[in-house]
Structure formats: structure tokens, C-alpha cells
Image 1 (cartoon, each protein chain N blue to C red):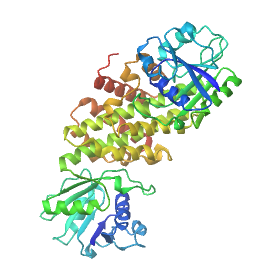
Image 2 (cartoon, one colour; image 1 turned 180 degrees about the vertical axis):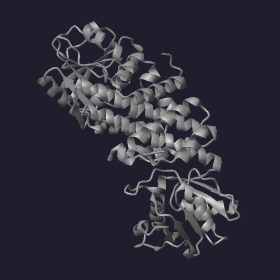
Image 3 (tube, each protein chain N blue to C red; image 1 turned 30 degrees about the horizontal axis):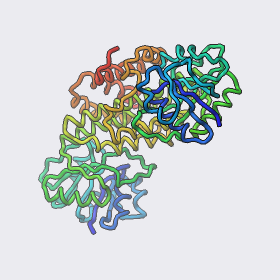
Image 4 (spheres, rainbow over the protein chains, first blue to last red; image 1 turned 90 degrees about the vertical axis):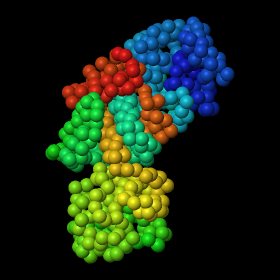
Length: 252
Length: 252
């Protein structure tokens, strides 16, 4: 049985906590957070503290706080011999004398959404081989998708995730607004959204691109641009269309 | 048993054909296409023809050809008393003396991808109530999602689908290219892509937006912009970020 302390009480911390508590090999023995209110979700199931000086000894400290706060929290940990990892996609492996690493679950987390953690890719990095192997063992208890990813690769993954998740979700929002204008239920698009995501699970998105930009169908593109009232949406439509044409070599 | 003739042999025609042939209430008695090569996928299972003058009498003609060709094909049908529908999202209800309608399945079709047609929304419209009811009966044999959608609504849906499917797939492609540059397998993003699509099945995309633009995290945004070499991608990144900020009122 390995013992973990989680520092932070946000969405990632919460889902990691739940995933570890469901294993038999890992026990989260304490959760630290600066403010006590966010600790309510944890205090029924483990020991909690708002004092970083009161951390219990453990096999691993997982720092899951906002990117800006990672370094400060890590520096405040008095225990110098324990492996410390953070869970951020954009913070590098810390350049400190301590044993440190990264334990980055690549997923979009909402507190109210249940997740199957076993499907979530864990991107791991550590300052030495032994710690990396230890992180892999820990990771395997909650996920079937373990990847060894260095800081430069993780930076790219974080950027790619903004396109594949945050920007994609905003395109869904734009589609929803277009539906709202004509009182069409957004539900009608659910199957299309699911299928579009499903297709790229087994194909390169390059090979399954469809639509007027890919076909070079200028008539439909003009028809769509005329329907958009907002200059901002017209501009995004035009840029994405040009980008698809460039990628797929269609001539309009 | 109702009898249908399909005109056209593309992806939509192919999937409609397969769906109808799997029912007990409908039989596709003939498929017409101008060129014979595309008819090979059909000729083992039904009668085929390349001569529009040779159409068999039927309860319904479904015209599933490219948007530009719809009107010409419909006008070439000699039979004037049979209900004729097209399957296009952007072509209006035809303004003709004939009984006509629209039978628009809102999905992205690839010939090599199997689809559960029962989940695909069918957007129906007809020039009279009796024909609309008939189309609903036909639609229900293959789909659980039947919608009555007029031409103006269908135009909006078609535009919304470009955002939610074609543009979204291109964002996946951009993410894939970012991964390729650092030799990171695109597979790592699969779970994130699936979860992003899953979340909006039960939530408005407005309520589940995450990421640096939503948070107003200027540091991460600048960090990402610096990573992008391509001026085109920088511009799309900036526009989508501004659009998210505008939608969610975050101040940078």
C-alpha cells in the first residue's frame, strides 16, 4: 500500500482523489488546501489540512494547483526527500534539488461529471529513472493509458488540447447559437458531434475531412457567409475554410 | 410494404439504401445513377439503371445527388404524381407543381464507416401535410429521431453542422499536426476528444467551456502563441480566443 498526499482541491485533485481511493494499492492519506471551503468534498473520506507545515510523511506528494501557484507550493513543502509531482500541462519539470516529476492527466475535468479514469491518458515525467518507474506503477493503478512524455512534448500536447477541446467546444457553442436563432433544437446536432469525434478515434482527421471547404464548393461557402450576421463569425468561417483548402489542396 | 427508388449512388444514397433494406416495411426496388460504375455497390441487391427514363413506378423517389444537380434530376423525372424528396441540407423545398419534400439525414457519411442509422436525426419537410405524414412513417422505419424542419431552419442546421463537424474535424487535424511536430502520438488526445463531444450531449457547450481563454489566462495564451510557427494558426488561435472571451465575458 502506497500513501499519497494531494495538495490542491480543484477539479483535477478531486478526480485523482476519487480514482486513487477506488484502488486497493493506493491510499490518499491527506489533502491540503490553502482555504478550507474546498476541503469539504474530501474531509469525510480522509484527513485534511490548510497548513502546509502539517503535511504527513508519504510516498508521493501530488501538487494539483493552478499553474501560477505550482512553484510556490512545491517550494513550501518542508520535506525534502519525498518525490513531488505536479499535474500541469504547461509547467515544466521543476528545476530543483528535490526529487520531482510530472503526473499530467490529459482530460477536461468538471466536478459534476463522472469520468472513467482508466481511459484517461497519464503523461509522466521524472527527474530520474527510478522515480519515473515508481510513477508508472502509481499511474497504472488508475489508468490503462500511461505515456512517458518530456516537458517539450507536454507543452505541445497542452497546446494541441486547446484546439481539440477548448476551441472545439467553442465551435459547438457557435453551432448552438446558430440553431437558437431559428429555434432549432441543438439536440439535432448531438449525433453528428458524437460521430465526428468517433471517426478520429480510428482515422487521421486528415482522411475523414468533409464539407464545402474540402470539396471546394464555393457556392455553399458564399451561401453560408451570407447567412452569418456577425463580422467576427464571418472572419472565423473564412479563416477556417482557407485553412482547410490549404491542407487539402482544393482550389476555389 | 412501401416501394422506394433512390436516385444517386453517393455516400448518403448508400447508407439510406442499407438502412431501408434492413427494414421489413420498405423495399428499395431500384437505384438510378448517371454513371454505371457507382452502381456496383447496389446491383447485387436491387435493380439498377443509368436511364432516368427507365424509373420504375414507386411510392417515393429519393433524390440523393450533389446540391447542384438536384433540380435537374428532379425535373427529369417523367412521373408527375409520385412524391419526390431530396436529401440536401442546403437546397430549398422545390417550388414545382409536383408533390415534393425533403428527407435530410443530418450526419457525416463515409462509405467505409458503419453507422447506426437509428440515431441519425432525419429532418423532414413536404409541400403538403399528407406527404409529410407519409415521410414521417417512412423515416420512423429507419430512425428514432424524426424532426419536422422547414427550409429556413434546415439552412441554419446545415451551417451549424459545418461548425460542429467540418470545422471541428479541422481543429482535430491542427491538433494532430502539433503532435506530429514533437513526435507525440495523436492517440493521447482520443479520450479528450471523446469526452469533449460527450459533455455537450447533456449540457449546453456554453456551460462546459474550459481553458485559458475562458479563464482569462493571458500567460498561457501568450505561451501558446509563441509555440505556433504558422501565422495562419496564430491568427485562428487569436480569433477563437477573442471569441471565447467575448462569449464568456472574461477580461484579459
